Length: 118
Image (cartoon, rainbow, N blue to C red; front, side, top):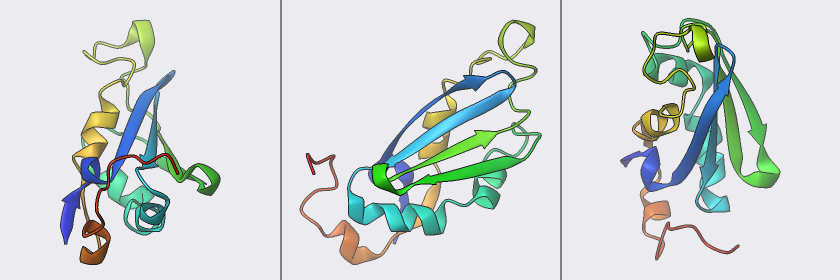
């Protein structure tokens, strides 16, 4: 089944110079392996086509059930030199959460994919 990342994860983003930094965190530990499989550097680069002009790096954080992405050369120079409306990359998390991925249907049949206190 195809779902938007917003249905199974949350995200935060910011900047480091001209690099956007996006953290993607699974609502539940059972979702993390799907994120690892589906949300690749190549797919994120394609999702941000026309925005990310450099490479995309992915870092896995299994103890946090999270992935961290660095989108190099994405902020028009960054900070005070950028003419972009979002020179700090704060909206990149929301943009990533719109990406659609394939998720096994049985995972979505769990009582709730809302964040749990696990």
